Image (cartoon, rainbow, N blue to C red):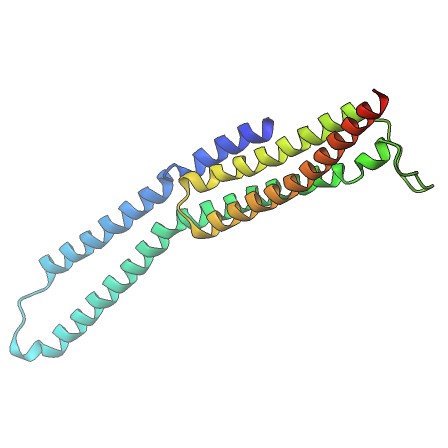
Length: 200
């Protein structure tokens, strides 16, 4: 639950415009316009003998336009790149959480709980009843599903194909692992049903 709340807050903050970057963009545009205005006011009227000076001035103006454009492109895309970096870092944590959930349910084998197979010396201790195991597996499946849905919060507001692809990977991973858990639940329910019928 804490992860979901943190993710919601982080995803919302990444979607908000960065005021510092916006201020920098406005400053670059204002500086560019100021330089153009200064140049137009202070350049003397050309004469026939100053053709080379005019060409040098035009070249300098073209360089200024290119440089300003490059700075603006860098600043405009900076927020997207920063948002992508933070989102991918958070999505990596969610992916790790999905693997941790899966790792903890690996030893929860329905056949062993139902007494169909025997433990070895290296087997972990299993103290769950069939009911408790069913609940545990059900909760694990729910947590995997929630992890996939929480990851989707990053794709909701960030229009970035790399983030969307990472979110889709996590959702697919969580769905596949949840499907494996539901196979265990189905085996457990079927075995419990068989045992109840055998007793009656």
